[in-house]
Every structure is written in C-alpha cells, then in structure tokens.
Image (cartoon, one colour):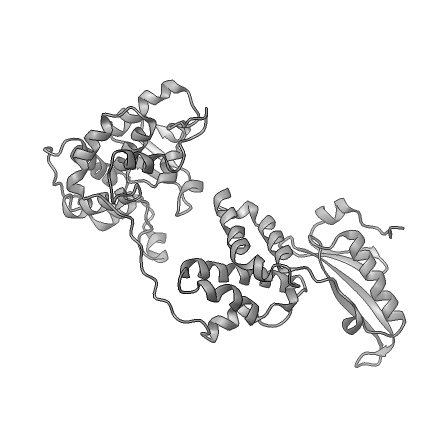
Length: 398
C-alpha cells in the first residue's frame, strides 16, 4: 500500500523556495535556484549529541527530479525504523545511487532551455554517449574516480584533443551535479586529474577553413550569378555579407528591412549570442528581393515548403562547380584579407563586419557602437569589387 502525506506530485513540482513538510520528518527543500531535494529528520534512539540531547539529524535522500515522492516516503520510513532501533542511518542505510548515465541524462534534460539550439544540446549528450557511457555509464555515480575518468579520456586525449577536452568538461559537470544532490562526496576526479597534470600537454593546432584568394572572387561570383539554383543565391549572399552558413540559411523575411537596407540576424543564430546588424548593398538586395514572390517563411527556402536549405547545400554547390580547396566559411577569411590588403579598413570595422568580438570586456562596455555606417561603406566597396573588379578598389575608412 502506498504511503501518504501532505505533499502531492503537483506540489512537489510547483512549490516555491523553502522547506516543505510531508509529515513524519520528511521535507522537500526547494533552493532559490529552483533545485529540489528530499531530506528526512530523525532522532536516533539512545544516542546523544555533544550537548547530551537526543541525536537529531537531517539526512539527504536525493534530488526530487530523480527520487519520486513515493520513493522519498519509503526511504524516510526506512531511516525512521533504523533510528528507532538505535542505528544511525548515516552508516546503515542502503541508498539507491543512480548511475552516471542516469545523472547525465537528467542534466541534459534540465539544461535543454539553455542550449543555443537543438544541435548544441544533442552534441552535449552525444559526446558522453560516444566516449563515456560505454565505459562507466552503468556505474553508480559515487563509485567513479580518477581511473574511470582516465579510462574515457586517455584514448582520445592526443588524437582528438578538442573532443577530449569537451568530454572532460561534461563529465565534470555531471559529477558536480551528482555531488550537489548528495550522491557523491570529495573532490571531483576531473579537477584532480587536471591539477596533477596526469594527462600530457597537447599543443592545439589551429585549423583554418580553406579560403579563396580575394583576387579570384569576381570570376567565381560571375559563375555563381549565371546559376538559378537557390544554393547559388544563398552562396552569393554569403560571399557578399561575410556571414556564417547558419546565419544565412536561417534568415527570415521579418529580419530584413529593405527600406532601411538592413538585415538584423537575431542573437539565437549568432555565435556571439547578440543581435548583429548587416548593412545591405544594392547587390545583396537584388539577390533576395525577387525571392519574396515565393512567399516562404525563409528567404532561402529548401526542397521542403517553409524550410530552409540544408547546411550542406552551398558546399555541395562548390563541389559541383569543381571549386577545390575552398569552404563556404572560408569566404569570411577572403573578405577579411581584402578588407585589410585592399580597402585598408580599420581593424575594428573589419572585425565587426564579421561579427567578431572586438576588445576587452571593459573596452566593449564603453564602445557600444556597432559602427554600422562605416561597415556599410566597407560592404558597398566589397560588393563593387566582387561584382566588377574594374571598379575603384581602394577606399580608406577613417
């Protein structure tokens, strides 16, 4: 027969910060952060504290996101029975410790609202699935130490260092959460491994996206312009704006202000996490304005109605055009080289045109302008060069 008390499942999910009693010494504790956990208060028969009073102690029973109300009541009853027999639950209770994978899956669910997009959320859990779950996923989370963590990290530490570094961060988060819920104690083994420098130092080799020489862009662009495919139009727009693939493919009509000649890419698609304004040139507008007739949600609609082009569409177009050794992202580098070598653009103007973060936190706090008009002048010069290499190419931006 199920145990009863004052709390209900709905109350457990919705009660605000504080300590809420269920009866018989069981409490739901809700932290200001919203985290919820169970505790039970018992008096151990025949045992005294340092002041000679009956030994009254609180014991954690686990987080409310993992331990249900009924399970908490059952565990609380077990603790009270032990206390009546004079047994201290701290040393005699047989707690059900969740596995590493169970905690990791719960952390992933809890953090879903914070992911920049679904892809990032999937990458977070997939890294653990591919490199940690097979080796220690079924282990009780309180039994994981340095040997188990090293078992996951060592095989890929040098060969796939960036992946291993992210894996270490995610393992650390899972173990920290487990500790906060009362399922672990002591130092995080990931921290211990790092401080002891157990793993060798790896000098990361920067990987640059292969880029086209700026001198070759006009001829390439002319070839693009002769094509009617949507991928060609998207690639033309990408080349002219210097934007990232995801920023361009996700552009919606409500982001375009043709009258103000402005495209505002929302923070959710920006690497920096802030809105980015892109000045639109005549050439850019000539690419996208005819597409309004399609009446799609997206400017660059893919094969499915009201869905954008796939992430691979522009790269595959490059391959069909037999343009080797060039990536879509590389056109950002091409633009940057041109801005420096030909346009003599100030560094901050060129960097802001690429939506790069410029300066320290203090500098950015005082320099809040996004230099839109200076960037507009630079983008007009870039469009003129790309579409007509004989046009004036040098214009110093003050």
